[in-house]
Image (cartoon, rainbow, N blue to C red; front, side, top):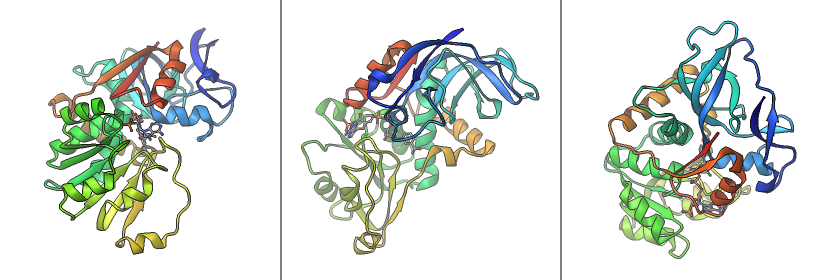
Length: 325
Ligand SMILES: NC(=O)c1ccc[n+]([C@@H]2O[C@H](COP(=O)([O-])OP(=O)(O)OC[C@H]3O[C@@H](n4cnc5c(N)ncnc54)[C@H](OP(=O)(O)O)[C@@H]3O)[C@@H](O)[C@H]2O)c1
């Protein structure tokens, strides 16, 4: 037996239950991983509340972890017991001491990357990779806007965009978060809880506005994010921290300057094995050369996952958060 955090119904953090369940056996093509650390991500909140639906209940949520391979199923040749691995992928099941997972979704860890760093960065860091290098390929000299710049994805994106030669504008919920974002490559933090971020973007860009806005806040920022774009600009909506964006008139995009809107997900951008390997390798590269530092600013015992969810939803976390089995 081992322990897992399971939900039997959707709801607040209180539905996260620490339970004893049998250790699963790896089926064909699968590996059994003993987690050393599990990553906390905002998507875990969506699965808990029911905004995103697990295939069935009870369910173990969580999409990111790092640890050691304990056993492999039939047909697995690339991965062997003892390998140090990490992943950020569906299906859910990471909030547990052990889990089985398709071996082809695992990435072997370089010696220099610790389990904790891996569990803190795989999901948020590969997201930063595809957003900055593939969804909208940022160019040196461009000024870009990143919402929730002091968050998990936010701190990684600010550093990576700066490394790529961008001027980074970032929104944050407090002065402390502004200082943190600034220390991680954000040239112009805007405290959007008291300042009008669109007016600030206009001031900072001298009225030119932006080629791209990365928006993970969703409902509360969507319309103003469109107003931060220059003609032909792209709004990348990649999250719903304040709630999902309601349906809108497509004509708005014409009226505001022939704009583009996309709603990408890491699942698509890492669906093929070579995309997954390429994204992980780009992340390992920027982390190993020190261009991107992974800030683990909160740690909770896995059994206290509910506390971690409360902190994340109350905007009390910065950088990445680990759940320790
Ligand atoms: N599509 C993808 O592939 C993908 C992949 C990974 C993550 N995401 C999305 O990216 C976002 C960031 O994920 P993360 O795990 O790194 O979380 P996070 O940014 O560390 O935490 C969420 C942050 O959103 C901000 N926020 C603004 N309005 C909020 C509200 N009403 N309630 C709660 N938070 C609010 C808060 O920062 P301030 O206080 O500074 O406003 C909060 O700290 C999430 O929306 C997530 O779903 C998407």
